[in-house]
Length: 343
Image (cartoon, rainbow, N blue to C red; front, side, top):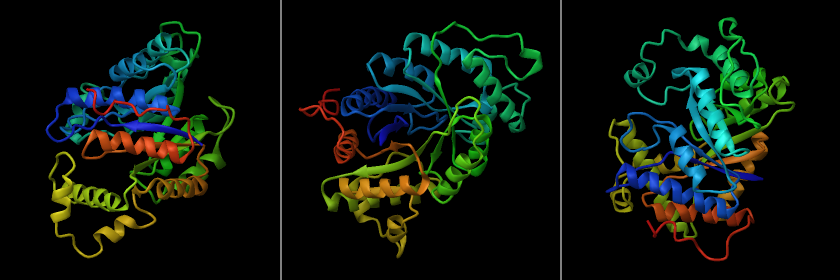
């Protein structure tokens, strides 16, 4: 099983965006040493608690500070942007870091409505053009003729010997249909929408039409925290639940502290729902986390697992990725990294 990372560059309590970016670099280095296969950087806009507003720029720095792990976008929200410009960005990245770049694209706004309008400033094309934009993007990034007739003589630069891996990201059946129709690799965000994960992945494999790829290939994105202490697992569960309650109330900010979560008067059923099979969260001891991920992989048929982890401290976040790698018997460097403490 190939393991990958999705990083939203969270800004911790008392920290700033620069610290979040430094954590992203340090975590990528540690995960490379642990044997993770990919490191994807998310795109979120106008969000005070996340620093990943420009994955293309951050990919450049993370790729420079690592050697082997694949680096990519998880993903670029193509509905906002020109396929030609996105293709040129990622061809340039592939030129600098050949054989290591992934281009994951999605159609979610990655923001609120006003921010989405600002990102699409002056662009009259609506979401109905998204399939054509995907087709043109894949053609531009691969050096082939685009489907839009007006651009058929246009070729994206620079010239490159290799091509970035192109992934369709999504959390619905629609995204699975697009990925299958265009013959792209598909990554489903279980941490956003757990219920349709298995049906979407089954639909993707069933309807896959060889085009960009010859055969279907997929991953499932999960939110997971591993800890050696079962009591800490319960504390992380409470923190995640309180964070979600606050978000639903319109209260935005970093995750609550363990003390805040312990003191919060949860209503009956809150934590039980969090522990349920369909929960967005996979939190527990390393063996428990692996068992639940394995069950999800069996249910969805995914070829890879992409893990998103956010904890109150960076040290806990690094340790969770270490424990999951160890649970999967990945190669681990003999000495613990100082990534968490050395910044």
